[in-house]
Amino acid sequence: MQPSFKKIGIVGRSQQEGVQSVLEELLALLLERELEVVLEERLGDLLPAGRYQQGSVEEIGEDSDLVIVVGGDGSLLSAARTLARYETPVLGVNRGRLGFLTDISPDELKQQVPAVLDGKFERERRFLLDARVTRDGKTVGRADALNDVVVNSGTSAQMIEFELSINDTFVYRQRADGLIVSTPTGSTAYSLSGGGPIMHPTLDAVVLVPMFPHALSSRPIVVDGNSEISIHILGRNRIHPPVTCDGQVNMTARPGDYVVISKKPHRLTLLHPIGHSFYASCRDKLRWSYALVN
Image 1 (cartoon, rainbow, N blue to C red):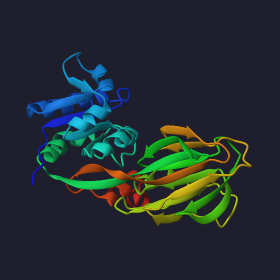
Image 2 (image 1 turned 180 degrees about the vertical axis):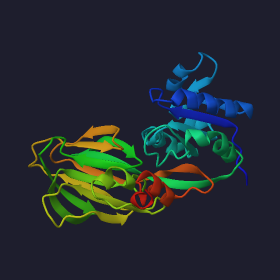
Image 3 (image 1 turned 90 degrees about the vertical axis):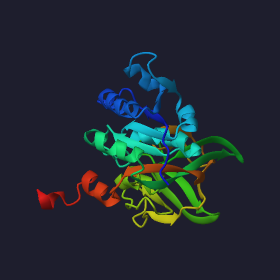
Image 4 (image 1 turned 90 degrees about the horizontal axis):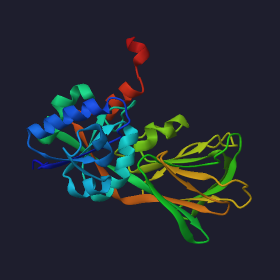
């Protein structure tokens, strides 16, 4: 059944280089089809005042049939944490660097966006993580992550000591700079820099990557996506480790706190042009085979 995209939301970061020209081209395509368009409020500064309807990301997610993110993966990560709860499909136009999530380049805009609007796309569902900081049995901080949740010392050359449990089963006590808990979506981001594996985005799994552990035998662990992961910040620590979601949302834990991470019930729906390939993205973004062809 062909989807009916009548109301299109557009979100992104107005400060990003090249966004205005892409935005103008995108708007021309949508208005040519007589579609209703709603812009995220901060994008409205790039266009004539009062010409387009504007709204918050929450309002756009609730009312739109499709949301187009103009920017890099960071822009999509920021929007995804809000849009997932409305189950609104998301299409990414890349104005950033890597673009694992925003996979339509500005050069392909005129061909690929109309094709998606005509129902020619591939749909992908990505799960998010829910991170809670609990203190004396009460939740004192909570945030979502599409890529990863990172618990770290927050200072250079200083470790934290923590205990890891999965589904109430003790795994290990560790001294390290921290721990990265990543979804398959985030496996090509910070987790990869820390030595974690590349995971296909359709996997229902989570990877735990120690950051500079004080043990040669400590290695990344891949666990079931439905696992509940508990990180106990031991009371003997002297620092208050930050807990970061997607590198954008920060909470602060104290010695004795627990960081509890589990899968969220809502998923992000990503749309890709026909022929999209995760492996092709890896070849392009990570320069696989580059030495063989140059």
